[in-house]
Amino acid sequence: MIVRKIGILGGTFDPPHIGHLLIAQEVLEQCKLDEIWFMPANIPPHKKTNDVSSVDDRIEMVTKAIDGADQFVVSTIELERTGPSYTVDTLKELKMKLPDVDFYFIIGGDMIEQLHTWERIDELFEYVTFVGLGRPGYSETSTYEEKMVLLTIPQVDISSSSIRDRIKEGRSIRYFVPESVRHFIEERELYGTNASVRNR
Image (cartoon, rainbow, N blue to C red):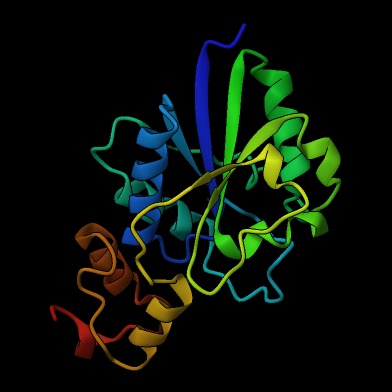
């Protein structure tokens, strides 16, 4: 018997930004979920670089970003394993631990058309329902679209990489991330932050 419905938003969250929070809130409401778990990845299989901030810094930034949102939770399950963070292994483990939970995995438009490339994708569909979010410039066509929930949500064209670039260029990130995250980035001098960009 399913007693809870939980959405999972995975990613590196390096850093988390307002686009992540908006996605989480929209999916929470539209799918009538009980919680959204923000799940920082260890070594994302789709990333080609290991140039990622420390685990502790990313957990701290996500914790700060969701502070005050009672239905948002940080999950460190993927950070507690070694090696690549394959979603199928994570969801299999979660379903074994929490068989009464119905899991929803949130993916963006760029991932919808690449789902067939995911590790053991057919097995993964046994553990989770995918929630696909439309994104300008990307197709919503997928071999698995009949098994997915497709949502339309407000579009905010912000990415973690664009935020890192802005910092390296000495530009402000105010309003791109929660203020608590911005202050943490400045305090820890992440992404090449220096005093010249503070308090903008």
